[in-house]
Length: 413
Ligand SMILES: *Cc1c(COP(=O)(O)O)cnc(C)c1O
Image 1: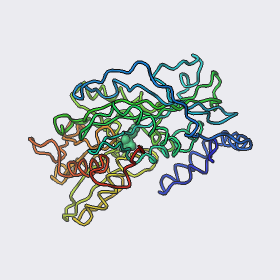
Image 2: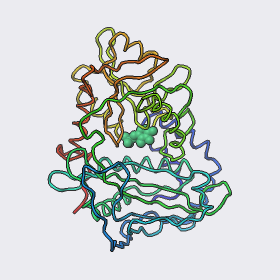
Image 3: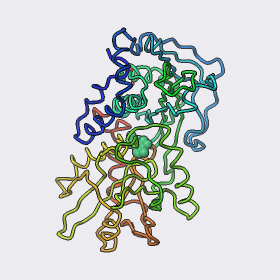
Image 4: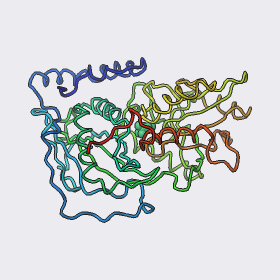
């Protein structure tokens, strides 16, 4: 069984870059790992899905018509809550009516940002079955985020079982049709009442769910970006590769600045080389053609400054499966904004798109950079390039179960 804060669990990663990130984390967290060893001496409870209690609502909500759904605005009837204490571990999970939390104003989440979260979706397939998409990836990532802020780890399989039960209970909220889904928001907060800065002695993991419609209800709409050169989202040795709430609030101002000048999102650059990293809160892919004709699909490597997106991994895996035979080279490597601008000037920038759970893929029309508009390969009348269209279709087929695949987890009846 898993215990609180096990650094070795974080070391169970595959790529060399994330091993580097883990080593950095271990150094940074040495004071906490001493505590972790002490805690491991007494047996702490892990999450046990079989212990769940269910209290059903007596006031079921009305359903919104699918075309009126706004992302993250309305929520289902129920929520899942699991409390944790440093002395006992994870307590019995509870499914209850969706309700306010009651927390002491001194709770450490409000003062020092002890919070991490996940974003994932449940889909209704054309036979009426409910499916999750690669949920173990979200659980692994949440455990890494949590450990980085000295919060507890848990058995992700137990949480997937509990989420399945919650989704099943609120099944009527899952809108049907391609692009429609139930957005799931697992959240973990430190609840200890203290203004002292230290590892939380108590925490709460909860899951809420919001029905959502397609990101692009009338088909793709390519977006314009502003390259941000005056603010940095993430840096080596930092926490930009973790889904911590504290990473997001500081990103709004540059987005507002970009919006003021008519751009829908900002593009995060890094370093004096101006490496392209992520777009808003999505991973970024660019497709270029080299002078010798070689085509290459490129995304930034997981060097600690990039969020390890499930969609990013899905795009890379599908590209390696399906595009290499068509002559594509698939690369996780650094590429700079000046290189991209040069490729665009020479009409060798074929396509660019963001990748994330909310939109799946989000085509990019152009990027404002040093007073110039860098075109990203789309003709005026086009809203998406061929790659973005293919990935939306390929990933959608696995999310909605049109293609039976191990990435799709079918919620038991
Ligand atoms: C969540 C997130 C992504 C996308 O991750 P997915 O697992 O594909 O949804 C990318 N970048 C940032 C900064 C994120 O927070």
